Amino acid sequence: MWYLIIGTDVENSLENRMAARPAHLARLQALADQGRLKLAGPLPAIDSENPGQAGFTGSAIVASFDNLQQAQAWALEDPYLHEGVYAKVEIRPFKLVFP
Image (cartoon, rainbow, N blue to C red; front, side):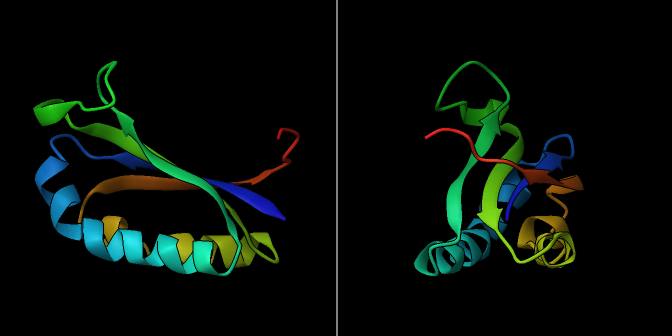
């Protein structure tokens, strides 16, 4: 089943985000390599693909897991959470309709 994972950043997270980014992306790449990643990306703090120093307010990930508990366990191991980028993480079942 697909799950929506929403990470909400702490204020002024950009420096920690950039430091933890390689490890965060490596975990996403592993999901992609397994065919389990539908989409992933940051949420810019301003209306721009390149927000610069404004940074990001969080991230959204849609990925496949066997059940909610596995999705939660995966999300709780995210480097962004451990490195103080995320203030909180929400995991919700997601029904893919399009595409």
